[in-house]
Amino acid sequence: MDTRLKILTLDQAMALPPKAHTLVSGYFDGLRAAHIPELAGLPRPIVAVVLPLAGELVPQPARAEMAAALRMIDYVVIAQESEVDALVQHLNPPAIARLEERDAILAKQLIDHVRHRQNC
Image (cartoon, rainbow, N blue to C red; front, side):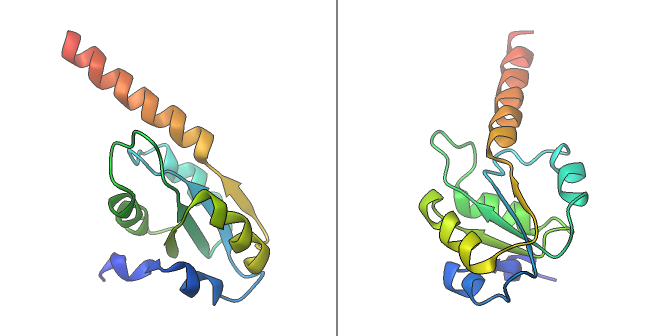
C-alpha cells in the first residue's frame, strides 16, 4: 500500500464524519520510537495533523509521509496552526492529543545526541 494515500487535504479531512476520529497534532520532526507508545495508546481511527515548525529538520510534506507510514495512523493532514481549531470544531473528536511540546523535546534530544557524537 502506498501510505501517501493516507495524506488528506484539509478539505478532505473536513469531510470525515464527526465524532469518529481521534485527532493528534504535532510536528513529527525527527519521528522517533518514542512516538509509537503515545500513538498506540490512543483510540483509533487516528487523524494526525502535521504542523509547520520553524527550524525543522525535515520539511513538512516529508514529515507527513513519515507519519502516514505509521500503521496506527489512519489519516494525515498537513495544516497550519490556525487551521487546527476549525478541524477540531468540525470533527468534534472523542479524543485529542497535542504532541507539539513532546515533539519539540524529542527533536532537541536528537540534535543534542548528534552534536555530542560529533564531539566524541
